[in-house]
Length: 42
Image 1 (tube, one colour):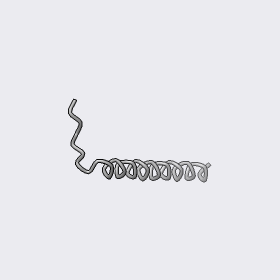
Image 2 (spheres, one colour; image 1 turned 135 degrees about the vertical axis):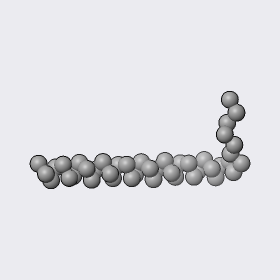
Image 3 (spheres, rainbow, N blue to C red; image 1 turned 60 degrees about the horizontal axis):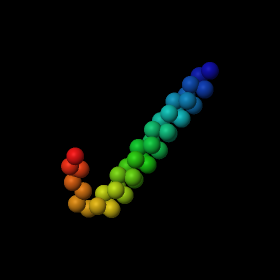
């Protein structure tokens, strides 16, 4: 039981880390594509 809980906790942390890394890469790519990226005027 304890091992399973620890594993699910590690899995959650790993997913969160990967997710933040991926979103960070996407944001960097977007910034690179338009260097003068102003907030969109709606």
